[in-house]
Image 1: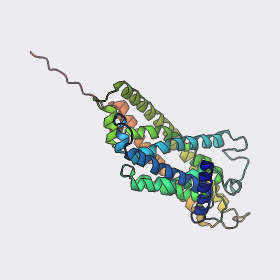
Image 2: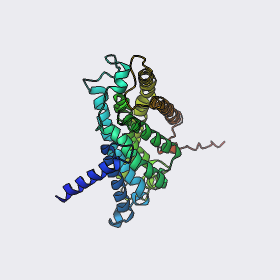
Image 3: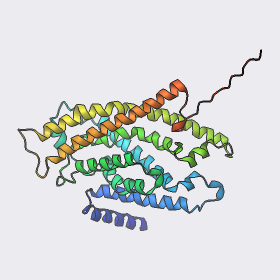
Length: 323
């Protein structure tokens, strides 16, 4: 009964706060839940209440560790929901031959869509503040990316169009399918050299359980490969295809359809805003894709990927022959 009372209180609080935020009640509830979990895990890891033998880099980077623990299940949920709707929904033609641009932009709606709620609520209430306050997560480019994703998610949710959802047809891709590469990244990112406590812990010869470290390192290498492949496929190649081949043309034709008027409450600027931001995101994916390709080239042709947490090339000293 206590749990039910707390859940009801949390739901009521989220519904109340959503009236002051550009978020749906569901998005607000998800954001608050993530924020509370972040605070709880951070304090738990900071207090070091566990036996000393269990202490590790997670205690040195409590905010970062808590963030990664929350991110991983969220990415799994987003990927599942996105893949299911985008590729396996029998009522949805991804290519869109059976619907008009106007139908795809303004004809579908679901205020309780989970990926869109996570993409707007979790980013605004949890991810962005955490990225600003936790030193290990402070990255200007990622901050821009998160703020942009929130604005796109809020716009698609109808926050700036009196509740009329815009482009919900594509929400399962932008807030679901592309996150498949974030699943292995959630693990790989932990052991990146920039997080020295985790990196040194993984490669320390003084570590008591070297067998476990080798397993973790092996999983890290596998996840790096999976991340590179999934990123290049679903973000580097498929993202520009969906964006420039379908999303932008649909938005342009829907907003400029002379035979139909814009739905009530939908301002013209929302269309131009979405076109601009999804274009920027496509360029950002391309930029990140080039960085990944450079790392692949370095690893394949030079055998060194130590700067991103991989194995370092070892130089063999050649002994000079004596005359």
